[in-house]
Image (tube, rainbow, N blue to C red; front, side, top):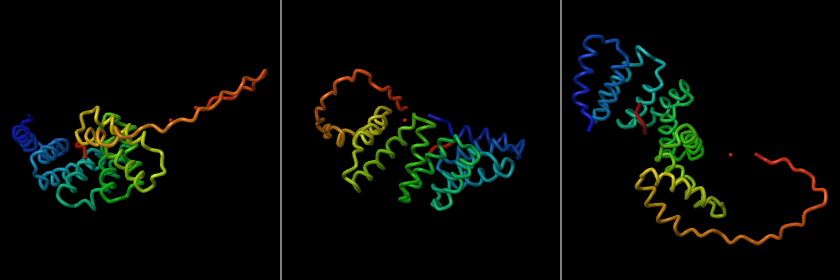
Length: 205
């Protein structure tokens, strides 16, 4: 178990020696988040930006602290700023995607979660939320053939010990039976066949 109180004491000492030590403010802000003191975390993250305004991790962390303090409407711009500063910031994409999903902005949330998985495949929460989006799409349009996508994302998240994904996979995917495939007769090979070119598919820092 992490000793957050001990870490807080060490960071307080470091900041007392140099109150322009931006990384110390950022780390102390993270400690405050883990201690549940979100107001103090925001103060430290904003201090970090005074000395290092282009710190992508701090912008991401401010977004999280804003959500924790009931200011979700302001959080999206900080996640977006983090992404603008670091286009490979997987956690910022995930956090923004989760927030957009809660706001029912499904299209943009799906894009962010797909990007999260592209940058960090080992994020079980992203796979789970993407599965929920696919389920929502299937519910709205039952003719969509996306059962495989739903179960694939749930199975991946379940394999990463995501309890909700495991429960939903067992409830949903075990019932899905593959559609019967029509047998298609193979055409006889031509004497001089033409060659056809083959076609080429909320985290704290």
